[in-house]
Image (cartoon, rainbow over all chains, first blue to last red; front, top):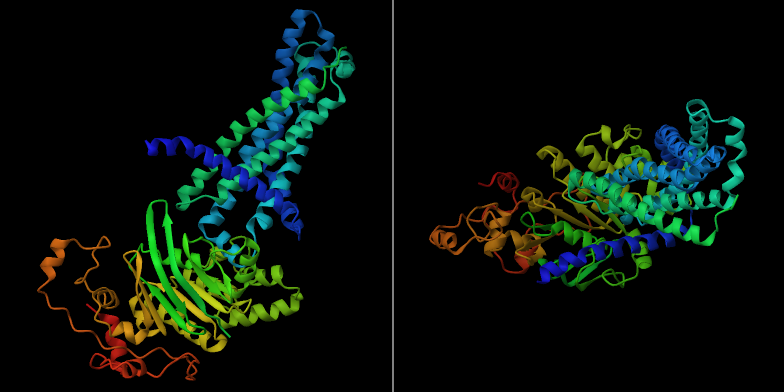
Amino acid sequence: MSLTAARVVAPIGTAGKLFAFALDVGRGLFRRPFQGREFIQQAWFIASVTIIPTALVAIPFGAVIALQVGGLIKQFGAQSFTGSASVLAVIQQAGPIATALLIAGAGGSAIAADLGARKIREELDAMMVLGIDPIQRLVVPRVLACMLVAVFLNGMVSVVGVAGGYVFNVILQDGTPGAYIASFTALAQLPDVWVGMIKALVFGLIAAIVAAYKGMNAGGGPKGVGDAVNESVVITFLLLFVVNFTLSTIYLQLVPPKTG
Amino acid sequence: MGVDVQVTNLTKQFGKQLIWKGVTLTLPAGEISVMLGPSGTGKSVFLKALIGLIKPDEGSIVIEGTDIASCSEKELYEIRKLFGVLFQDGAMFGSMNLYDNVAFPLREHTKKSESEIRDIVMEKMDMVGLLGAEMKLPGEISGGMRKRAGLARALVLDPEILLIDEPDSGLDPVRTSFINQLFVDLNAQIDATFLIVTHDIHSVRVVPDQIGLLYHKHLAMYGPREMLLSSDEPVVRQFLNAQTIGPIGMSEEKDADQLAAEKDMDLPPLPPIPLQMEPSNGIPRRAQRPAGEWCRLNGVTPPPGSFTREAEHASGHQS
């Protein structure tokens, strides 16, 4: 009985620990000295492992949206709005989601593996013993780097996605280039860009925190590190889709869609 | 130099599993203590509790008036500056070369210039015999070198207390002797309080001033080297002489049948107590006592042949 109860309650405990860890990171943000060097190195590293895969994902993403939405809109007879619809879809949803997948899959897994390896080699213990808080020294720069890179990646996905959509619409669907570009602002508005950026920022934060938490709590040798990486990616994906849904809902409530 | 570490009634459980209970001892300032025990008795956990990496459930660990078991995170980071710790595999930062590893605590905690840092790092690297290997990465050197590099890093902030986790694991007997000699020499130089966790009996017999034995979830005995080496207490006797006859079995404790079967067997006689290892320059350490002093003061007759050159060799080959 108590064993079953313990099993049922266990995930709540884990969620609580993750949240407590996030608070510790939040506190570490304001503690001096700020690790500028580590921040730049990490930002560079995360960018280098994510830029190319993100660009490669963004092109088909934009294309699929262009094809799907273009086909649908053609049936409605509103072809001149294709550009507008695909911009909206790419910037509000596809951009942040593609960013999230890549940040979690490439950046987060690298963070979890790195910290996990340090954990089992007792490097983190050694650091604490040397009087240095690993959260402030290692985790905070990684979290900030992840957030920064996520925002940049989101910008890149948006541009590449929209460009990809343009190419597919104009070349494959015989759309008019002028109409595609001219309709950009018909439905899309500036807050759409902001919400995309905010989503990317939040996704970067979540991915880095989950990865760092899992990495720092890896245990049981090399297998533990593998498990930590695996769990961090899965947990991040789940969280990101839930958070994306929540943010989208709130946004659609707060900002009324533009009526063209 | 060197400070006391007073441990009182320390208890630790992981979930329902009791690690040890009621551990009470004082590591005397400036002396070398060794903590030993069968595998899986929580020696490393004890060491981690001493530096506050693991919070004990009960009891206190007092260092210079601060109780590590109950102090705040901030005080803990402050008190840790008194410690140097050598982890089992050296725990070097894999992304930095040895020089940066050893310089790391200085760069983080002091405002020394790079040239001052260079002098200190080179001095410590020389102490552990690693001059010339500064630019190597931890992945490129042998386990013994990693341990010595870890020791150099532990020494760089001039610790008052040095904790050493299994210095002999993965080292051959010759290197083990060298690293033991290094500890003795270091103790003579810096007078810090040493605690070595190990289960290498040969090291235990010749290196320390004090010996502690963790067994069956408690501290079986803690005291001067000669006291434990001349002790008739079954657990202590069995462990320190690496014998199969006694209360310790393959899985922690022997069952009643096994014990009954052994009842009539004669215990082999206690081997002679070897001479303590001396600093290589021949000048005795400050904490060192004359051989046989404890036995004389307490009216204990040491086993025949003790404190001779021959005893030193006999102890290495117990059967």
